[in-house]
Length: 114
Length: 112
Image (tube, rainbow over all chains, first blue to last red; front, side):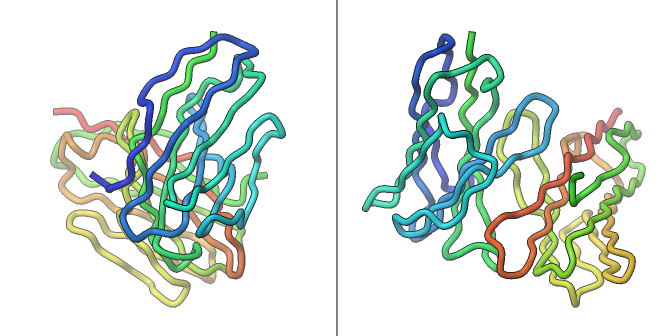
């Protein structure tokens, strides 16, 4: 158990809908990262927050947005969902800014868009 | 083109045997290189982290090596166990960059 929690574990929704994925980092970790992993593909970095502020953006679509709240939990919002958005979405956390610090991954949220 | 290429894409080995996974990267310079193990449907778990000045790092039956001159890393699994069946991911972090570069992973299947 990494100490990072993600909810829900599974999510099934229809195209065009909007969903929110939630992540609680390990106690004491200030950085939160979001990743997308499509079937048989590698992890794709989406976005990173550090202590409530956005720090880095990766391959995140404009239909996706995220935020980190004062209690350091984070939410990833996916809107106007398409079939291709079906994937595993992972959240990771680290104690500080990235690179030197180990990232601990949560169990993931499996999103299925039908 | 991906900055981190892993090979082979997949491999099958018998329990008790050894295997070696390869990672070639173009990120240069880099701050550190990591190997993660990802069980199916679960989040990746760190196995080793090496800075550019380190040549080898071990974690139990897992040994990672790094050749910064040739920009290659390898992960050696000794005396494989059924629980080693997973995807192994090589990750490189450039200096002064928040974004990690992930390889596509090598899927290892250990059979009894």
